[in-house]
Length: 219
Image 1 (cartoon, helix red, strand yellow):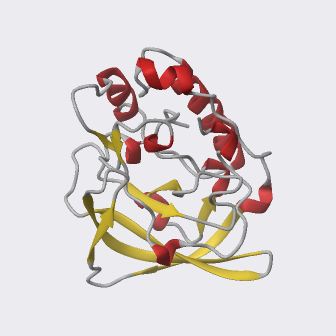
Image 2 (spheres, one colour):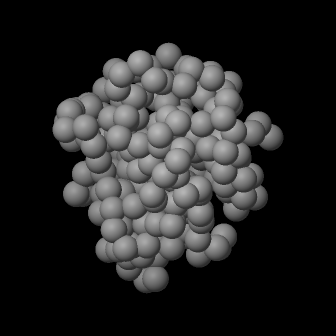
């Protein structure tokens, strides 16, 4: 099975978190581009979490500036759990609209609606809209962007929300598996140098997602 790099393409090559200025870490972007997304399992999530820590700790791949590193507290996660590995019903959106996403830098990034994923957690029905960049980005054609907030946002997780990635191959399977153990923060959680899309209100879950990256990682 192919491995993934920790900082996923949504926050690099996929241009969901393009850094402003001239301080982009090119080594980090090249590392991301060589490692496509793999399937969603807890085993993969454990590998991903280990790689995410290493990605930020390694000075050759870290997306953080020297000043940001001084404030950076490291990456922490909720305990790994099967509870937040959900089977979702995927429904394509015909003629999906192009949506303007406000960003952390008060700019706009455009994403196109791809479909919806419906699932249940704690007996409560939830729906997330899945997106792709409005303009195809070379090297990231297979990636699907899932930005979201939940009942932990601003309390035990980053207030502006977190991201998940899926693959177009995931959507082609009989069952869509979404593993929230792989939820991660956008680069703007750790640095003001980035321009990260903010999850839309329609992607706010009513339940707590106590999986993936936790609030302790925020400076």
